[in-house]
Image (cartoon, rainbow, N blue to C red; front, side, top):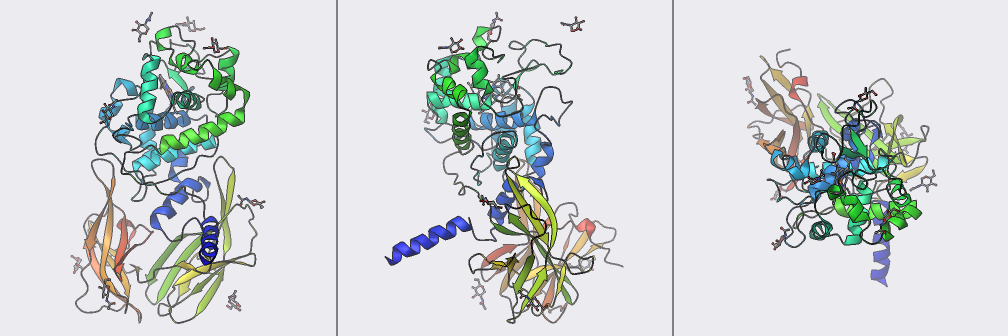
Length: 524
Ligand code: HEM
Ligand SMILES: *[C@@H]1O[C@H](CO)[C@@H](O)[C@H](O)[C@H]1NC(C)=O
Ligand SMILES: *[C@@H]1O[C@H](CO)[C@@H](O)[C@H](O)[C@H]1NC(C)=O
Ligand SMILES: *[C@@H]1O[C@H](CO)[C@@H](O)[C@H](O)[C@H]1NC(C)=O
Ligand SMILES: *[C@@H]1O[C@H](CO)[C@@H](O)[C@H](O)[C@H]1NC(C)=O
Ligand SMILES: *[C@@H]1O[C@H](CO)[C@@H](O)[C@H](O)[C@H]1NC(C)=O
Ligand SMILES: *[C@@H]1O[C@H](CO)[C@@H](O)[C@H](O)[C@H]1NC(C)=O
Ligand SMILES: *[C@@H]1O[C@H](CO)[C@@H](O)[C@H](O)[C@H]1NC(C)=O
Ligand SMILES: *[C@@H]1O[C@H](CO)[C@@H](O)[C@H](O)[C@H]1NC(C)=O
């Protein structure tokens, strides 16, 4: 009985809070996945201003959304389910893979450029690519796709294996089987993908002629009449015999792969999609999720990322002499209410508490507008958007009072690490090729290491974090009665730095990234 009761409580907690904040990787994945438009919009959304836009050239019949989905499929399509090699691992970012005939066109290079803006120490190129596909589908009329993170970037190109239109049906059935999909799933996944975009003349001159159409100057023959949105027209037009799909009614039957694939079960699957937009959408949601979750063996994905109902964001602590400055925002999920009563309450090291009436700071939305969120930020009462705390009291955890309801992660609170933070005495050393980082470390905290984390990119376009140890000061350098400074000079001013510390054996990092060219001069 006891165990059953405990289990139910845990199950309830798991529903209410997907994970315990803070969790650097999950916080960032959750944000990338659910903060898509408006406040704190993810960087990737800048490349998808609308579904009919093509940001890499004149908008002439192409769409970014289509490229993102095709790229995710081609990256996954190298998977061999027998030996677990290949899969969605961003190996398509390598020029060698892009140069293969099976990857004809510039869509892969374009997509990986866009994905690059979302990549971070916590989000791989492969996660960014999976997210791009999810955003394209969801924001352009498609169903919601369960999204997981944790993909690992390949370090070299995968073996070839993307299906090509001139191959015969048996080859395609075998290729999809190798990728882990049955024949019915092959029919479905091709239809799900080919509700977007089309075939371009340039990379496929033997399939599509010059169209001589001023509204389609890149000569793209579309798979269905609604090529920038997800819908079942790819099936209805095919079944009704009105389709213009160049892989069904192309002038050269050898390359009519969609015709062979769609008809390979006597049209049963395509007929069911033609009859039911809902069945098409739910089938595609399942298969797209399986597509992006097809990863090399050994890669462990996170749980499906679900939104935190109340999520702190942009929590930054900075030491300014005798004042501990705290800025913070909170995101309230599933609301567009700009007039909620929101207070941040906090606890400190000396048994005290504080509270601040937060102010509305913006709205955001995601998943094609299906979800909305409202953002509130701390406000000091003047123009500043940070609070001034007493360093001795410090801060240990936050909670929020939202329209009278306490939000504290079921009693845990939202923990804050104030053991270390940037000191505003940090400065640039003239002639500005180096800078001094001053880190304020709380006296009495068991900080066995304090270090900078220099965030750079390696030759394989992976984000790497280089730790630069800050030697403990030989004599304590007090900044105030509760904190001392640890200092180090850095000579690479053009990359972002986070600050890290190992406290009681646990590693922590600031979520804030610091660019030292923004520091004041040391000599003023
Ligand atoms: C036998 C399997 C497949 C073949 C032979 C095939 C073939 C093609 C070809 C030749 C193009 C034209 C590319 C261009 O001109 O840029 C294309 C476009 C596309 N394919 Fe496939 N495809 C297959 C499966 C899939 C699957 C499973 C998906 C996704 C789930 C997919 C998604 C797309 C998308 C979204 C486009 C449009 C790209 C754009 O307009 O930029 N394809 N496909
Ligand atoms: C997939 O892997 C198995 C086991 O290594 C191998 O025998 C098979 O040839 C591979 N398939 C392809 C298409 O490369
Ligand atoms: C393209 O269209 C223009 C105007 O209709 C016409 O003069 C020209 O001959 C066409 N070119 C081709 C290759 O069809
Ligand atoms: C049809 O396409 C195939 C494969 O690309 C090619 O070998 C063949 O020459 C084409 N036939 C015609 C009539 O264009
Ligand atoms: C599938 O449907 C299309 C369109 O009605 C038709 O042209 C084709 O012959 C059908 N294929 C099969 C295998 O029944
Ligand atoms: C979102 O909020 C509305 C009320 O504002 C509520 O009816 C609905 O159930 C909520 N949806 C979710 C997914 O929480
Ligand atoms: C907030 O602080 C004020 C004093 O500054 C206090 O009167 C009030 O009770 C506090 N509210 C909460 C919810 O702690
Ligand atoms: C940083 O560089 C300055 C100027 O060269 C030097 O005076 C200072 O001692 C250095 N500080 C540390 C912590 O190395
Ligand atoms: C400090 O943390 C280290 C690493 O966990 C531990 O070995 C050490 O005992 C701690 N020291 C104190 C004084 O707690």
